[in-house]
Length: 261
Image (cartoon, rainbow, N blue to C red; front, side, top):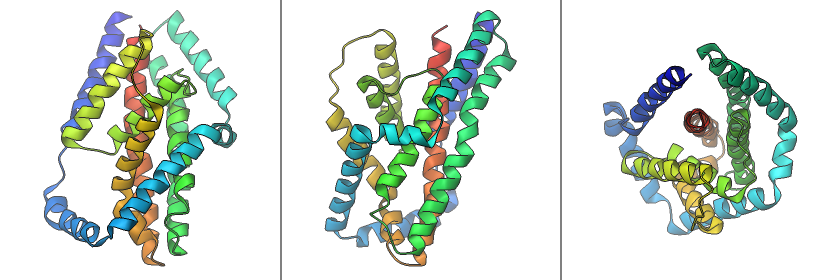
């Protein structure tokens, strides 16, 4: 068993290092980045503040009142049962194939979530709607992470786990030193949760920080999305954000699952 686990963890570490050290392409740096920077510089500060507040309020609403509504978008009990069955099979006889079958649970929802967020972002952008759809978008991000957490046997309802989820989103949407910082935080949080260690994190502060990270990641998109017709680009960006969150979440939750052995 140890040999298989070690091999799986080495694969995850390799993927993790690839994400942590990923650099933007030359085309992006020379062509795309300057355009984005120019657009962001032209956005009034009041719009940036409005966007930060919109994401903060959105997260507050969804996390404090919306979990039960998010759970209506998927079958929580079915996901838990699927995990329990596959986890039992792994505990009886661990094989590479059985771990792959466990992975398949988290992959099922990714296509659905990215498709919904793409249609939602593009459709609202076409109508010239930018800020009002933020709670819907946050719901899709959290739905994505929650389903992945359940597929690997983790309960997202605990406040400490919610803090982990928020830092997970931050890590997925940052790069370079910022990503490495969040990745380090996640490793420590994972260890603290596993060992039931007390923590000094304040949920409201983590929500505010995550709101800023997401706001920055979506700044240009939401500004453009508020312009009719041009705003259809929001669907493309929504897809990329959900995909980044999904990819990173699967990596980190699978790593936590394997480390239990």
